[in-house]
Image (cartoon, rainbow, N blue to C red; front, top):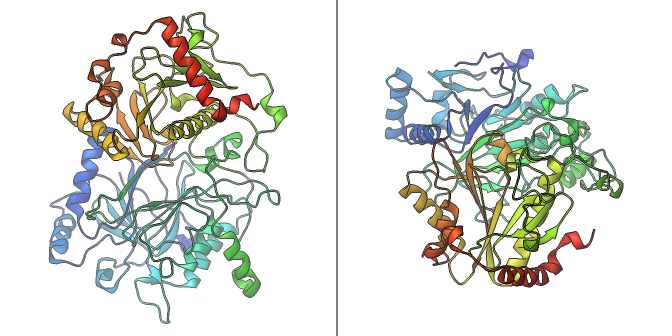
Length: 555
């Protein structure tokens, strides 16, 4: 499926197919290893279904004889890319020969060069801005470089529109200078030489929801950052910067990132104003203010009022103040309609079937209870009070409280020398159950637990895909879809899309295995029966220990 093209200088946009939430993959430096790239893409699509496009940043072409030989097969038509691929331009003199038209062109079937700079505007409203090459440090600029004029022209093309709020995706090969400021730890990167100030200007002005870059051989998924100043400006959507490693790296660093993005313009305003719990200050704000003092010609635009929070469905949620996204006391006390089951449910809190003696903590939208037939005495469930089937179907205010309970449990388990492991099975179940099982730190490492899940999945011919730490399942899974999901204490996440059959006890079997808890006889919860007296004692002990971390007691 080819997408129509238009040259951005004439203010014509590339028109994407009419997709409500386009799905795609972003890739780091391919360096000419096309067979390895497309074999991996085929494997992913076989397991997870087809994606709409592949966006490549960094060095797409290589400089070796082997890379040239591989490319010749695709250019001649002997081989064909299995997905519509869009790539940025050259970042070095050696590979400029592959890009014959600076405004973009088809390089081979299903492989398109975007051009020097420009923007997609899809029929669905999705916007993808792009800037090829590395920053020029002298005039005349080499063919593989962009100039400050290129950056300013692209910025002006979008921000001069009074209705501009931001773009959905920004593609650059270079990192923005200083993106790591206020963010999570960045290891193995020389921050003095890394990044371009021009890309920082562009990212600050365009406010991309996702910004992909490469060239540094590193995978860095920065915490989301604000695009506004708290208490001084109207709240705006958050941005996420994701740097991808090179495909051939030997350290198994992530070079592919899957996304499913509802266009900014199609999102519900109530959802747009919401901020994730781990949001930080903008890494560019201070830099831009200093720049404005010395150069008024490149004043960064600070416009736009609507906000964004991942790719949440259009469900009503709490309105947030501009103070970091916390709901006001008046809003949190408003009565809400709690979804009810069509028949008896063991987990709806108001249901007579619920064994109340197992309940540990009750929040506004969720509660914690000991698991029936638990693997360990401190194995608990996070459950919505209302009747919801899975995480991807939860309203935003429920998700928010789930995150608070997860954080509280992580802190509690850490205080008693245990690791947090959580899994969900949305298959042959009616009410969401987030199983949280603590694993003693001395028993095994987080990597051991991750490997145990992957190995046992492979033994049963299932693929567990690793998904980005700060991603939302709603970006990847559609409501009503069956899946199995794991989250580790490191924040790493694994996902399996269930297509036909799935072993119901898989999560327990992995954690009960010799590699983790070494209690294989407890893999089936029905074999772990305790007396009511034992359960009451387990609950009492857990409540007492959890009390310092239980935010519901402070409300």
